[in-house]
Figure 1 (cartoon, rainbow, N blue to C red):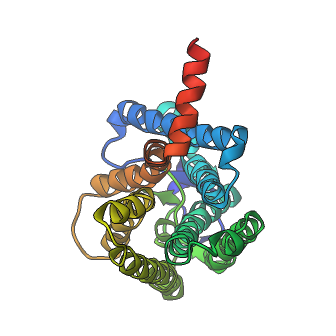
Figure 2 (cartoon, one colour):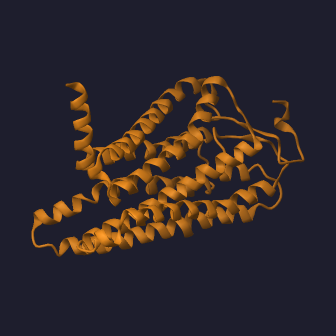
Figure 3 (tube, rainbow, N blue to C red):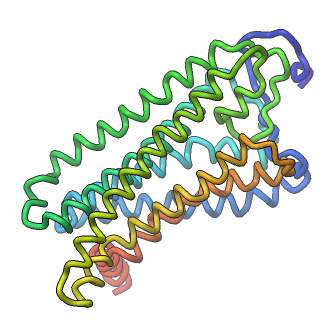
Length: 315
């Protein structure tokens, strides 16, 4: 711990993760709901993957997209939660510099990947509703695999410059990160010198990458709603719109709080640091926890298969 006030060092051997500053005495209790959320996220997403794998009728593009989303949620939550719990329960605050950069890469890469998956799923719904007769020939299982690979490569290529910039800075202030995980802005905030390029690149990722994703999703749903309103009966409209509810719920959970928190972290609002850190931690666990619940409850085929499995085991 004596290294925490060292000055003028480049690429420190370790960072010190502070957890949630101001709430250190409550870390043991705070970890309990986070642990429960993580268990729900892991169990729920593995259940989705197992259900789709075991049910041949679910081997379709829509459910493969859900599986890709489940894998992304698993990696996203696992990239930060185990270390976070070790800080809260075992006071294991040190993290190697390279391990910190690795965590930063996976954390941000899979946030970008998740956004890309939502865009792909919106386009899938657009084709299914606006061009139903061509859906099976346009969106094939092979195409889903290509989209999944493209989404991962896009996330990696976007975050790689961010990682390289973080690695090149000199850290002459402190090596204490006031969060329980390594994220871009908290790490850059420890660097000395002019780090505006990192800050500007972070804003580019937020507005030009995630912002464009939102625009594509809105454009897709604009066309979807136009197609739905052209349907002849109210029942047909409700049934068709019902196929989009799960996707829309996941989008709301992912984008709305994320945009608010990103803007809040860059503003000059004098918000208590512990409150800001706590809300960030809760937010990044919400999509991995809620997505399997949303798709498990709202998607009839998955729900029916799960009920069949539980009833079959119970008899």
